Length: 324
Image 1 (tube, helix red, strand yellow):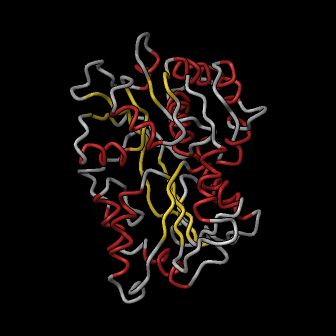
Image 2: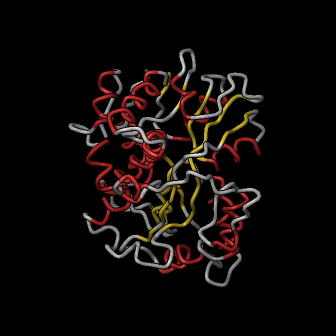
């Protein structure tokens, strides 16, 4: 297993931007790693609008947990686009994001997706279901859930699918243990896991649907399976309390039809129902949400508390770091 050393990366980010300011008057977008390609198109599109004319953005991408920690440590973000709501809520406690950030018609979310099973081209190991990930000899990749928000979505998808199938909580946790025992690398972020998979390591990568679509568009030879039971991923965006007016306008604009079409072209499911193409993005019959598992507050305590969480215990037994 690959352990994760987060501190040097965090220090590097802070060194680049400085604890007291970015060294630039441009607003700073701090995002998790997966939507980089989308934001690299969204920003020029926003600049072509009346409210975005003449506005440039500095950008920082990385694992969601590290990005949230960097902002709490002084990275001067104007916009935070993280993998899951708890990483944004941690900024509320520091007064860095307004407590009402999720009180809009989209509940603070800018995109959605589902967790899929990404395989080698042609699916040579015939991986079709979650249960296939626990078979002997199947090498799994997923990021470390104590640095990557995407990894938490991945593991709760695997766990929740077992619950949906009628297994008890101990049985579902035992299945999760079997999957983690088959996991050969736990990188720091979802994007690093994709790069490791693209480099030839592993038989199956647990990933966002949009990440698999983007990789294929970039020429990575892979297939992916949408399990019948999987979780609905909902990714937030928020302006910080010190955000500039253009940054706040950008956050509002990301929910526009123009912006949501860009997200859809990158494989995301739109937060605008009228833009979701059911032929391209069919709803899995057993789709469930984090709310069905008790909500993020309960899930974080039960599974991802570094000291007492069930996943933390499994990871420590496997020699994987649970440090945040």
